[in-house]
Image (cartoon, rainbow, N blue to C red):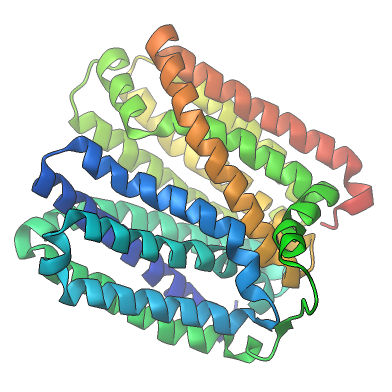
Length: 402
């Protein structure tokens, strides 16, 4: 794929993802060390999630009669400035924990407004027939960032301290701005025209398109179902599985997580190799990936053999990537690209809400029915998602253009 704009965007998004991981680890670690309170430490991701949900609802308002590209670059500049100020004023802000939380809220709003815009860029700079390959490359880098970032940041904090580690975040964000500008500067003159449209209509527009477009509706339903199922992989559930089912120590918790991420990277490479076939068969790829992921999840939940569990985690990666990349591409190619930011904003709000509720549901199942039932529950939901994709396959002649 010979597209300098995409590769610039790839560097930008990877830098942003890594900066976010480092920022989250630094703040979470500091709050816990400062307060010695799990509650305070858990408030950080909770506040981020709630704020980004509110930002998602209001995101369409900031796009009124302006350039999406300009807004995105300006939001990233604002975020970089805020992180730089956090770096310079770290001692003051961290000595007043409530001021720090207020600062985090402001940063989270900026992130929440920028996220749907960032997700909407790829279809604007990549040809339709290369979307699967582009989404696969972005997915591989994201998984690599997750592994490296969460694994190494804690070690780096211990070795060089909070402020120098936070400097890494600031540098990455300023690099991302340069690369992002190179990638989307040609889009600066493309305006989002909503002259005379009321605020209530603007905020509902994304939801309306999400519901009226059959493909987006089905794909979002799959995302919702899989979002609920995805909570079976939260750290606490995996840790209980390792201890009660595999009868291993905490180090196997790390092995399980590492094997899953390795699998997703391998899966990303496979999706690049199969890009043309997946592009031509998006719905069938969704169905096949979901069904295989469901079977592997069920076998994982029933397994009591540590080595087999690791192998199953690695095998889940390709199934997950094929399904995820196909869903992402189907979503991007079945609506006008100018509407993507609003639709993505609505989708993000829906998925954030569902994920928050499903954490409680999975916790209740684990508490009262046992850890194996959790994975059986997840496998059943993913299988239902595969069934939804078969329904979409039957109706695609009306809306889906794959």
